[in-house]
Image (cartoon, rainbow, N blue to C red):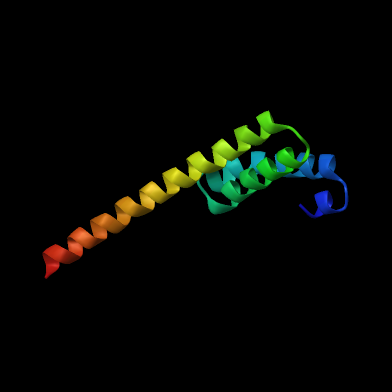
Length: 87
Protein backbone atom coordinates (compact mmCIF):
# COMPACT_ATOMS: atom_id res chain seq x y z
CA UNK A 1 0.00 0.00 0.00
CA UNK A 2 3.01 2.30 0.25
CA UNK A 3 2.99 2.77 -3.53
CA UNK A 4 -0.67 3.71 -3.32
CA UNK A 5 0.14 6.30 -0.66
CA UNK A 6 2.56 7.84 -3.17
CA UNK A 7 -0.16 8.02 -5.81
CA UNK A 8 0.96 4.89 -7.62
CA UNK A 9 -2.25 2.89 -7.22
CA UNK A 10 -1.86 1.06 -10.53
CA UNK A 11 1.71 0.02 -9.71
CA UNK A 12 0.63 -1.09 -6.24
CA UNK A 13 -2.17 -3.22 -7.71
CA UNK A 14 0.24 -4.83 -10.16
CA UNK A 15 2.81 -5.64 -7.48
CA UNK A 16 0.24 -7.01 -5.05
CA UNK A 17 -1.37 -9.00 -7.85
CA UNK A 18 1.94 -10.77 -8.50
CA UNK A 19 2.52 -11.27 -4.77
CA UNK A 20 -0.96 -12.76 -4.34
CA UNK A 21 -0.45 -15.16 -7.24
CA UNK A 22 2.78 -16.39 -5.68
CA UNK A 23 1.33 -16.65 -2.18
CA UNK A 24 -1.62 -18.69 -3.40
CA UNK A 25 0.96 -21.34 -4.31
CA UNK A 26 3.29 -20.93 -1.33
CA UNK A 27 2.38 -20.67 1.53
CA UNK A 28 -1.18 -21.34 0.25
CA UNK A 29 -4.62 -19.77 0.03
CA UNK A 30 -5.43 -20.15 3.74
CA UNK A 31 -2.20 -18.63 5.05
CA UNK A 32 -2.55 -15.33 6.89
CA UNK A 33 -0.16 -13.53 4.52
CA UNK A 34 -2.15 -14.64 1.48
CA UNK A 35 -5.40 -13.54 3.13
CA UNK A 36 -3.89 -10.16 4.06
CA UNK A 37 -2.65 -9.65 0.49
CA UNK A 38 -6.09 -10.39 -0.96
CA UNK A 39 -7.64 -7.96 1.55
CA UNK A 40 -5.09 -5.28 0.62
CA UNK A 41 -5.95 -5.74 -3.04
CA UNK A 42 -9.63 -5.32 -2.18
CA UNK A 43 -8.78 -1.99 -0.55
CA UNK A 44 -6.73 -0.84 -3.54
CA UNK A 45 -9.46 -1.81 -5.98
CA UNK A 46 -11.98 0.10 -3.88
CA UNK A 47 -9.76 3.19 -3.93
CA UNK A 48 -9.42 2.80 -7.70
CA UNK A 49 -13.24 2.80 -8.03
CA UNK A 50 -13.29 -0.82 -9.21
CA UNK A 51 -15.95 -2.33 -6.95
CA UNK A 52 -16.31 -5.55 -8.94
CA UNK A 53 -12.62 -6.38 -8.61
CA UNK A 54 -12.65 -5.28 -4.97
CA UNK A 55 -15.50 -7.67 -4.25
CA UNK A 56 -13.66 -10.61 -5.82
CA UNK A 57 -10.60 -10.06 -3.62
CA UNK A 58 -12.67 -9.36 -0.50
CA UNK A 59 -14.66 -12.56 -1.00
CA UNK A 60 -11.44 -14.54 -1.53
CA UNK A 61 -10.02 -13.17 1.72
CA UNK A 62 -13.25 -13.80 3.62
CA UNK A 63 -13.65 -17.36 2.32
CA UNK A 64 -10.06 -18.23 3.19
CA UNK A 65 -10.36 -16.65 6.64
CA UNK A 66 -13.55 -18.58 7.38
CA UNK A 67 -11.91 -21.84 6.31
CA UNK A 68 -8.88 -21.12 8.46
CA UNK A 69 -11.01 -20.26 11.48
CA UNK A 70 -13.17 -23.33 10.98
CA UNK A 71 -10.14 -25.58 10.90
CA UNK A 72 -8.74 -23.92 14.03
CA UNK A 73 -12.05 -24.37 15.85
CA UNK A 74 -12.17 -28.07 14.91
CA UNK A 75 -8.64 -28.62 16.23
CA UNK A 76 -9.42 -26.78 19.44
CA UNK A 77 -12.62 -28.77 19.91
CA UNK A 78 -10.74 -32.05 19.47
CA UNK A 79 -8.12 -30.99 22.02
CA UNK A 80 -10.85 -30.04 24.48
CA UNK A 81 -12.49 -33.45 24.01
CA UNK A 82 -9.20 -35.26 24.55
CA UNK A 83 -8.50 -33.22 27.67
CA UNK A 84 -11.95 -34.00 29.05
CA UNK A 85 -11.53 -37.75 28.56
CA UNK A 86 -8.10 -37.69 30.19
CA UNK A 87 -9.52 -36.35 33.45
